[in-house]
Image (cartoon, rainbow, N blue to C red):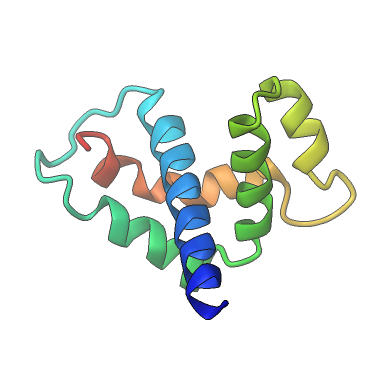
Length: 104
């Protein structure tokens, strides 16, 4: 049972990482170092120290998008319009990793 939970959390983390990487790579970034090995560490650090309230929102988005739903539907489903943080706040928080993930 414990091993199954570890596998599930690892899978979820990989989905979130993939979602963020796709989002980050969707816009051009200039002036970034060619070494992109810090991408994963940057994302994990942002989740752990700077953006922990964003983890459930981004997890919801990744599950929704991987489930085949349209982006607009996923934003409506996962974004807490009356609460903080919003999806846009999480994008801003995670944008710190853009440079280190641009060449990934």
